Each structure stands twice: as structure tokens, then as C-alpha cells.
Image (cartoon, rainbow, N blue to C red; front, side, top):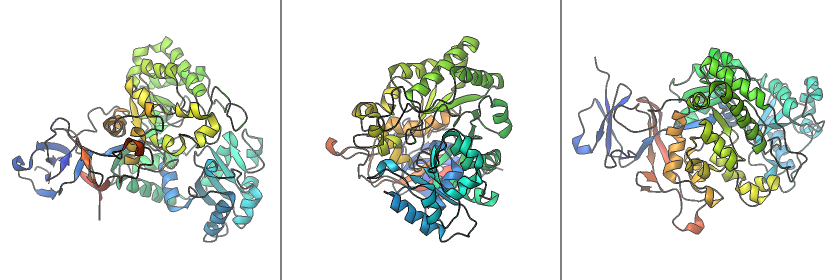
Length: 519
């Protein structure tokens, strides 16, 4: 017996192969017909689109689902603008918790403060009434912790990145992070994961790439998330970031041994490995792997037939990763590396030589346009860390796209919010006009690019026979050639903070199943 069919009609379809299409038929999870309303076949069910835009659904190519869900339901510090505001927020949040509860918060960004000096461990103790406190910086590569949490983690004092003030980085941060998140029960984790995925679906996202690993999550968290993939929520494609961990990644159900396999840290925490010293801090950050380790990891991935990758932000870290690719190519050849579509997450500080390396080895650049929107341009964090010229060269999505680097866009949520249309606009309105992409190209990187990054080349399009994975949008900004107008008409008004309204998701469909419906 044939499964029930659904006809969606009366819309504007983003379908380059048939720009005049206004309707599509879904049967057995696939698009069975495309065309005009007048020619539409009979269906078991009809959905009137009333002029809405229909596009391929988004893919967020870099998320942390549990952290995102906890941030959505917990202490959000992204709006605080001083140490005092942060302490007030901790105090108010802690007042509603049991006495033995751990205060988990996220999102403070000292680069937005007039006086970028965070509170110390003792002040956090007092604000939280003696509770253990863990507050991750926006980058999630450092955290403020209370004296109570420091006392519960004596091993942290001997680890790299420890500071008695309570602002911890590197290995010390990993120690306290593991201890803090041990307080989250399995039921709370599942609830957080479901909340994150449901929120993603409400934004027209049908798939996410979860970047897990022993330094940022744990195996139970990772496998638990994969277990709910696609069950009324977006699909989850997992990356397990453990050096020489291809076999373990496969056992856990990951599609790749990469994601947050750290070659360095983050610019926000001054731990990204850069070639020229930070202007507002000591040193050049930290490189966590050698070229030889990169080589061995790629060879391990080749031996297990698995995609690999690294988190690399600074140009020095990316140079190390590419040196490792060169060494690996001597063993298995460039063609085999290219076929694997290995990834680099973030790839923020690039130059022509590094971009050429991505082209040579067929590396997928998993990038976050919101990084430039939030921290790029004059007077923002990248300028304070790197200087204006270097900051304007960061996140060179336009240059990479123009020479054929495969791009997959995401949010790194909760580092930046899940916001796919905002990311498309950010890429089209990069602070450096040279690095801007067309809305069409940015949209493709956030849809089909995410599918191609996991080797699903036939997804992310509205085409006959393709999976019926799409989103339905109200478009207050209007549409132009099947995509919303995301920039104001006056060139002087264009930019990352353009006030033009973004599309609002009315429904998200994953392989024919509705996973979100506007109420």
C-alpha cells in the first residue's frame, strides 16, 4: 500500500531548475513532483502555502547540543556588560537553586565590557552563596569558576592554564568543566538535547553536526544525542574529536573523527595559535598538536575509512594542520586525502598560502559567519586582539568561496546562537567588503554545503526524487529570485547589523515528516 502523499501548493519555491514552480508533492519521504499549481496531481493531503517561500532546510555544521540546551534553559550571560552585572546575574540565578546545586552559566564576553576585568573566584563564591560556579566564556575555551569549584578540583592547580583568580584556560579548564558537568543528570542532558534540537527545527534547521569529544563532552552524552537523531527532531551527524581516535569514533556512531579535535584554542580566550603576538595579551596562544600528530591522525582515519578533521582558528595552528596534510599525502597520496573531504572547523585567520592548501587537499571549511558579525570590524574584539588590518582579513569566506574551497556554515552554538538566516546575512555583509558573498552562495553553504560535508551530495535541493527536506517561510523582507532580500537597498546601510527583518519559519520538514509547525 502506498504511503499517504502531501501536496504543498501556492508557494514560491527556491528551485533553480524550475524557477516557476509553486507546488511540490511529497510521497515516501521524497519529492515526487514539482511544478505549477494548475498542473498539480491529486494528493491525500493538501497544504496551502499562501504565498510562503519554500527552500531546502538549513544544516548547522557545528553545534554542541547539550550545551545549547543548557544555555537556553539556564544562566545566559551574553547580555552582561560588566563584572558587577555578571555577579548580580549569578546571585539572582543561584537564589532559585538548592544549596548543593552547581551554578552553570555561559556567554560572558569581556571584550564587550567597558572595563574588561572579570570577578575572581572569591567574588563568585559570595554571589552564589558558597555554591560551585562554572561560567564559560563565549568561546567555551575558558571559564570563570568559584573558589568552591576550585577546591573540589585539586588537580586543576597543576594543569596548564590554571590561574588562582578562577579564570581558567587550556587543560585546567577541561578539568573543572568535566567536574561541573558531572552534576548534570542523564535526564537533564536528554531534556537539554531535545530542547536544543527542537529550537533548531523552529529555525528551519533539519540537520546538525555535533562536535563532541573527550575534552568537550563525554561518550554517554554523545551516543545519547545520536540515539534521538531524527526522532521528531533534526538529524544529528556526530564528529568525535579524539587524536588517533578513528576506531573509537566509528564505534560511537560518529561520521568522522574530527570536529573539536583541538589544534588550538580560541581568539576570545587568547588561546588560538597565531603567528604574531596578541596586541592585548602575552604570547601567540597555544598549539595543541604537531604536524606529525596531524599526519598520524589522518593516516588513522584513512585506515578506518573515516573522515577526519581539526579545530583550527589561528594561522599558526592552520599551518601546522596543513603541514600534517603534506606529510600524510606522502603516505597515501593527495587524491585519497581529497576524497575523504577532511574538515577544518572555524579557519578564522587565513592567508593566500593557507587557502591554497585547503584547495590542494580538498579540505571542507566549516565556518561561522556570526563570528565576523559579533567580533569583526573596527572597535570589536578581533581588532583589540589582532589589530584592525588583521581583523579585517579574518573569516575570509568570500576569498575561500571564490577559489573553490568547499564551505559548510554553522553557529558553534552556544558560542553564537542558532540563527541560519542571520548567518547568511552576516556572510553577505562581512565587515570587509572584499570578503562578502552573494546571498545565494551563502545560502548554499548553509544548506547543501552542510550535506556535502557529510558526503550526502544529493541532499539540500528541491528536485524531483530528492529527499523531502525543506522549510516554509514567511518573508517580511520580500524575495528576489527565490531568496529573501537580506540587505537594505542603500549600500551605505548594508552591514551585519542591517535591521531588515529576517524570514520566520512556519514549518520544517525532514524526509517528509513535519518536525516543526508554527502555532
